[in-house]
Image 1 (cartoon, one colour):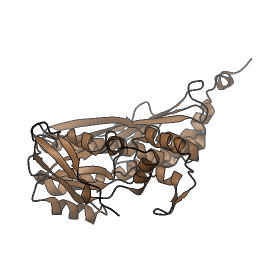
Image 2: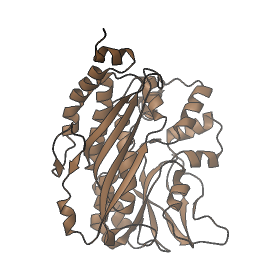
Image 3: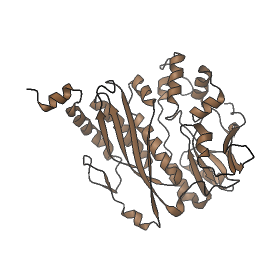
Image 4: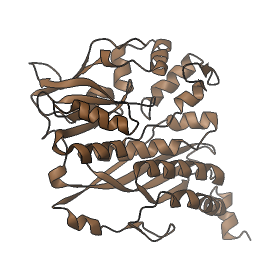
Length: 356
């Protein structure tokens, strides 16, 4: 008679491999631990001491969940799994800081066709590293083996995070006014959006992922897999330093610059970005050319060089830029909030991209 472990393994689920993966990831997860985390990995729930919230007037919990889309396929093509976890953290925690919330803790979900313990551990190591960069604790997660649903080397990842903001410090459209300045923070590449279009062009144009991109001294595959910039700590520093001079943020993800900025712009106003203040990233210009993309299509799919925008008081633009520069973030004044004209959208891009 087949024992229970062998029976499940024959059905496609290897419990021993799953337990091996957990052991391999423990050291990485420990590095992301915050002092408020209670207990160790392996319980039924992650615990977080919320005592500090007592000092807030009206603490609001913020939550966000996301994935990295089909960027996982680029990782699979290249057999490189140690950075995709950083992308996941960025997509989740940087949505939280838009409202002014400090990300506190995060959980992840990894679905695989077959558990390869070292590969899962690499993915989780990337998540833990991203959490370190964001000052966020990784308090738990799930690795699910899906034989018959996913091929053995296929996988997907998702995550959720919780943060907190004191209600008087809440950022958003209620603070934004005419004359405010748009401060742009550069993206590190495609981030984790528009990869179905990226992969479509790669296949259609038969691009060689081993080709060296001279501008970056990296292979094309490495450029496409560049981890998403994590802005959480930069944004939190602006929140603390600028106080009521900072009015809002926009995380530039799927939908591009205009559509994401629109989400925080009140009725009657328009965010106007001036393309001449920055250059289109090399890789986006190249892929747009290879795919014969019209500019509107490109600007709705990709971030086009801006990963996060801060919206600040008209007299505080230089303070924001210098504060970010002190942290190593090279930001610039990219536009302004104007009164909305009849029939005008709430967020637009004008002019031509600067030449390199």
